[in-house]
Amino acid sequence: MILLSGFEPFGGEETNPSWLAVQRLAGERVAPRGVGGDPREEVVAVRLPCTFAGAWAELARAIEEHRPRAVVAVGLAAGTTHVRLERVAVNVVDARIPDNDGAAPVDVPVVPGGPAAYFSGLPLKSTLAALREDELPAVVSNTAGTYVCNATFYALMDHVARHEPHLVAGFVHVPRATSEPGEGMSLDQIVGALRTVAAAALVDGPEPALSGGTEA
Figure 1 (cartoon, rainbow, N blue to C red):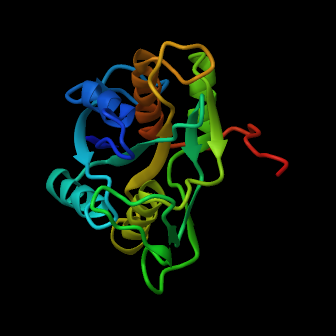
Figure 2: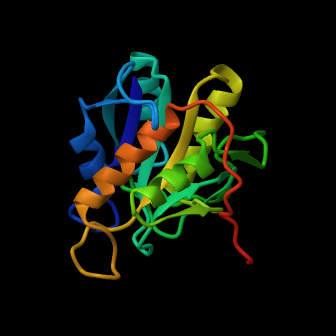
């Protein structure tokens, strides 16, 4: 089983493509990328509140209930036109806007006493290669921000480090769902990209030497 999470709308938006896309994948059975056939893993979807207090609590509950083989948390990055495979979760909350509970913490740790950062457990370069093969715009991102997405990502990786080291897990940002060129991706493209991410997450093996870095 592979668990995908998306967020409820926030910041005055009526919808959130992270949840719309994840919801469409619920119940599908995904084969490991490049393997085909069986075994296939069922996709289970969970909708997270866009709150610092509630997002990780809901995702943790879903992990406990479903005991997945892999977890891919998904959020919206409205300013991007690519799927962003997040590499690093940092142990800081610095809210630019209040969350859906009205909370706006500044310069506080996600997990008091936790390490400064965690790396994603997803096979980022294999996933990047797969998305490019599918002609879907994607990048490796080195910051997941300091809002609810990053806090959820950090809490997820902290859980993996402390309790489930064999659980494959990480975070992906998606752009707005739009048909306007240069402003995002269509919802169908986002769904297809997350299907590719899910399939790649199920593959064990060495990562390709594929550049995903930046100069600054």
